[in-house]
Image (cartoon, rainbow, N blue to C red; front, side, top):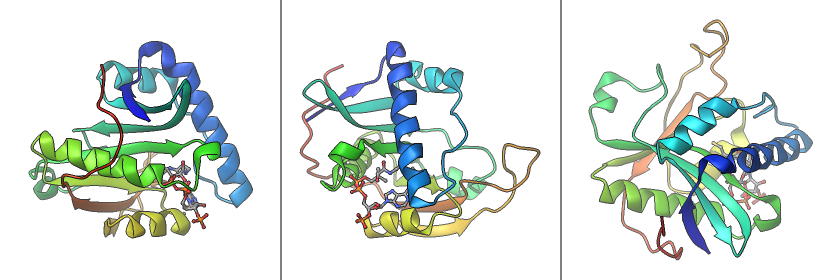
Amino acid sequence: MRIIHARPDDVTKLLRFREEAAAWLTRLGSDQWQRPYPADRLLATIEAGSVFMVMDGDATAATITLTPYAEDGLWTDQELAEPSRFVTKLTVARMHAGQNIGGRLLDWAGDRALSEGAKWLRLDAWTTNEALQRYYLRQGFEHVRTVLEGGAVNGGPRVSGWLAQRLATSADHGFSDLTC
Ligand SMILES: CC(C)(COP(=O)(O)OP(=O)(O)OC[C@H]1O[C@@H](n2cnc3c(N)ncnc32)[C@H](O)[C@@H]1OP(=O)(O)O)[C@@H](O)C(=O)NCCC(=O)NCCS
């Protein structure tokens, strides 16, 4: 499997990818990712070079966004003063689940973060999804705190406010090198 940068014409594919994950999450009984993700925001992160896809032959097995920019209102100024990379939208296709591709992708992200000079790999996970939070704890992240307010809709509940971090370290993730 190899990792490539997403391109602007991957927007439709990646939005469909997310919808498939949302449908699976609904079956699990979670309210995570039920609102459609804005295409313009996705396009902007692709154009910034922050969106990556794991390719298994011609099939997209997974995606991750890795960015130096944190969402507003989650991390303190002191935390933001520490060099960090932020993981968002980590998704593995259901037909590729159960193979730890997500874990390897987090290792890849930590490795890349370290090579870019970051100390921390950080993320925010769905506030109400304890199964997802346990997944990140199993992947070696430590829970920092949960931010409950300041969400996008009128500053209401923060849907993705479970903050976690782990040190950025070099890792043998097993993906072939980024080719573009
Ligand atoms: C999180 C994810 C990328 C992990 O991929 P992976 O390392 O290949 O691991 P798997 O998909 O096999 O999942 C591992 C376990 O976590 C559980 N899990 C993963 N995401 C979950 C979620 N959002 N809600 C509840 N459980 C979840 C799986 O059910 C599985 O449980 P099991 O071991 O009891 O079968 C992948 O499960 C996924 O795409 N989840 C949906 C999207 C998501 O929540 N992304 C995280 C955004 S912060």
